[in-house]
Amino acid sequence: MAACMLEQGEDAFRKLFRFYKRRNPPADLNGVIDFNRGHAKVRSTKLSNNLLNDQDASKVGLLPLHQWKVYGLEDFPGFLYISNPFLPGWQHCWVRQCLKLYPRKPNVCNLDLHMGLDQTSDLWGDSQEKLRNKSSVRRSQKTLLEKLRWVTLGYHYNWDTKTYNHEHHTPFPPDLAELSCCVSAACGFHSFKPEAGILNYYHLDSSLGIHVDESELDHQSPLLSFSFGQSCIFLLGGLTREHTPTAMMMHSGDIMVMSGQSRLLYHAVPRILPFPGGDLLPPCLSVAPSTETSEPPLIEPCSTLDWEVCAQYLHCSRINMTVRQVLKEGGSFPQGEKFMLRGSEDSYHCDDGKRTMELLDGEDLLAKRGKIAQEYGM
Ligand SMILES: O=C(O)CCC(=O)C(=O)O
Ligand SMILES: [Fe+2]
Image 1: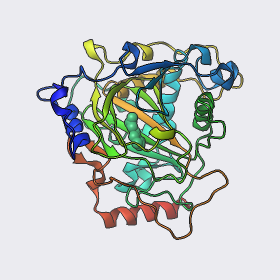
Image 2 (image 1 turned 90 degrees about the horizontal axis):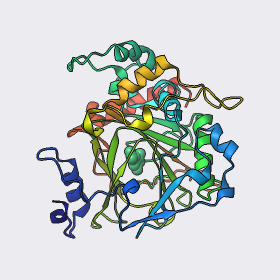
Image 3 (image 1 turned 135 degrees about the vertical axis):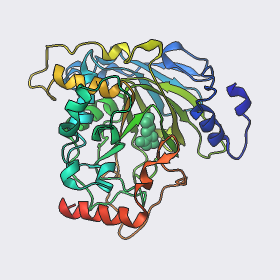
Image 4 (image 1 turned 60 degrees about the vertical axis):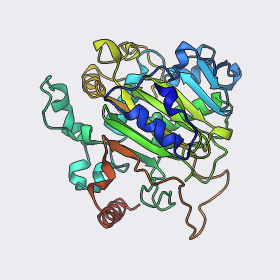
């Protein structure tokens, strides 16, 4: 029972993290907030309709603003949860971008750290046929897409130093920038600049360790988080790990906004939850994309052939994209100064205890990163 874990203490976040990560016996999920089902702490919120026009919304695949279901959470000012505001079929396009386009160079991914660039230049090309034809035979060899854990965009986050660096920057994908600007504008942040992205790729045994996203130099701007595929338990805590976190579900299509007093809170993903009842995907992903597209389309519609690959991948995976503004308005990187992330003792990406970052030791990692940066002139 969750309540027995809710004692205050030095390690309250870790206790609840371990509670929800546990599989055997499975954790009681009664204490987990599901925004669509209501909860004493959930507040339904309306965004001002004039913040995003319907045409701009539809261009990036979002419903008209007046149809969005938006929630706040008691005790978490600045936190917003938007329950799947995507137009039917549009999640397909964004998932396809996450699997087919964003892992491409010059973006950086975990596989670059222990594989040659010739092997990681086209993960989609390498994996698509194998995924499309994947039978129910469980122990078939993992495709490169299935080995993907993270991709960084724009200012590339350095997992070792926990910093961004002005010298390690590539163009931020314009389509994702536009989606992010629409969502941030809808939430009242008109001058948000999408400058860095971290895409996390989770499987059913993955988790994301306890952390605060404070490496960005600008903390006034919101952090946007988009989720696709299988659901997860998300833990949102306080300014310290002593604060017992609140557990909530995130489902496919949902968007979370962390801003204001909620921007620098500890958070984590202890558990991925496969869609219940034997269906492999949630119903919102079963809707075929509309043949009507905006002119000119921002992103190419997802073909049936591409969706077969994405759907097979998502049967046991979750994709999360977080988008951040790194620099303050008119600001720049400090000269020769180090800015470190707090609470970094946990590795971020874990697959049932195995740390994906431990595939190489620190020296190898740095050497490999340097090589990638050099080859791409970053
Ligand atoms: O996967 C999620 O929902 C959270 C991701 C996250 O916290 C991060 O990338 O910093
Ligand atoms: Fe985070």
